[in-house]
Length: 240
Ligand code: SF4
Image 1 (tube, rainbow, N blue to C red):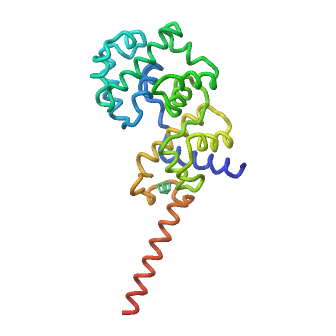
Image 2: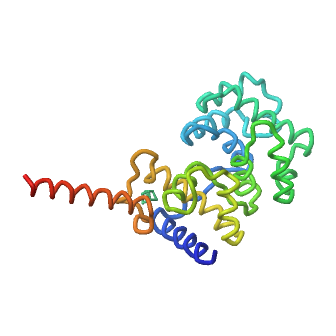
Image 3: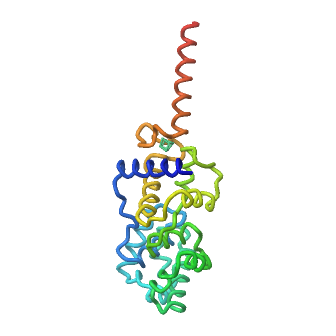
C-alpha cells in the first residue's frame, strides 16, 4: 500500500512537472463552476465554454435568474452541449432546488459535510457520481477524489487496475492510498485529464512523448511488440 502511495505521488509530480499547474476548475464564480460541471456531461469542454459564453451575457449565470428563465431560452443558449433540452432541465432543476430549499444561496448547499453533500447532489435528477464529486472538490472545496473515463484509461494502462474497474473501485483505490489534501486532489484530477486528453488517447496513445512512458505497462508491451516485430523481420530477411 505504501509502495503504491509513493508510486501515485511520483506519477503526480511527474505530470505536474511536465504539464504545469492546470488551474482547475476554469470558472470565474462557484455558480459558473457548478453550471459547467452539469453541462460537461458527455461533451467536450470547448462546447461547454461556448454555452457559458451564451449564458453569461443573458444574465443566466445566476441561480435566481436561471430558476425563473423560460426553459426554451436556456435550451437555446446551451445547445452547443448536446442533449440541450435535457441539460436545460438539469440546470433549472438544480437552480430551483437552491431557491426552494437553500434560500437561493448555493453556499448553503455547498457548506454541508462532504458525504451529506454528496447524498443531496446525487438525489438531484441528472447529477451522477462524477458530476457530484466535481462539485464537491472544486465548488465546495472539500477533498474527494474525482475519477472519470480518462482515469480508467490511464491507470489501467499503467497497470494499477482493470479497464473494467467501476467508479467506486477507482475512487477507493486513490482514496485509500492518498492523504485527503484539497490541492493535491484538485490538481491530480486535472493532470490526469490533461494526459488523457493530450497524449494517452484511446486509439493511438503518444507513449514516446509521455512523461510516464518509463513506468507504463502498456508502453512497455507496445515497445516489446515493436522489438519482436523488428527481430522477426530481420530474421526473415536473413533466411531469404
Ligand atoms: S506511456 Fe502511453 S499508455 Fe502509458 S500513460 Fe503514457 S500515453 Fe498512456
